[in-house]
Image (tube, rainbow, N blue to C red):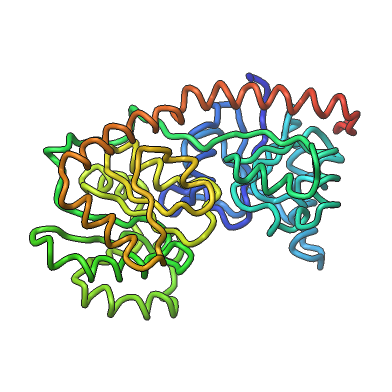
Length: 365
């Protein structure tokens, strides 16, 4: 779709390669040269996808939510897009639909989001906004209790050909956790499991790559303070936050990547990237993870006694299984390659504009 698209990032997302979160990276991957990406604050060197423009906020003594809404309306009037795309903010999407066609992309459980918590809110949203979710799990959560309301699936994507990749025989005896170091991600379960199995696998190493947040200014949280002594005792290296390219390079080096989430993962980008890099993956079945990995990974409940330990033991012992899962993972990751994603995106954007016209939404004069 060659018409101008305006993308509104969530307030905490920074369109900056040094601290970009998952949504910013996805937007950058898919943005066309004429697209406008709007977010909070100026960025010295923004990500290259599209044209980044900071939102301008009113100085009036208003709530932060209202200031965001007014700044987005002003941006719509300035850019005059054929479609405005809002990520993870149902309340903002519903408000902006008064001023032009809007597509909402849900990356997390909508039932926990402002403007979509109740059945009434989600039904109203579906009547005025073209809603998409990144997985079947997210879409079903949006529809919960609402009957047959419309919501489409737009999976996250990778640029498979650009991912670093190593052949199985080139990989290091390394088990990697990569992502936010928070309880929901099950990092402590990984530490517990590694401590239980490491003595049976001399020569293997374990690394935790990540911090509480994206960026070098991530705080030292109580969870991290609790985790560090246990990780040190298990001889696990904790690198802290690293840029996305560094994470991908480590995924291409590691024999095994572990994704032990307790949280109901709405998609599972870490697992997809690890499969794309050719690593053997152990994943939790929480949320959409089992839907994402299919038969290309081992599944293990992080808090089920012995489950994660058994999966680690099995993969570290069996090089043939690691190679098989790495190969199957690459094949499965190809389903989410950027070429297919752009085709899907083009279809969804056209349908979103048609939806707004059918619903007779008010268009910016």
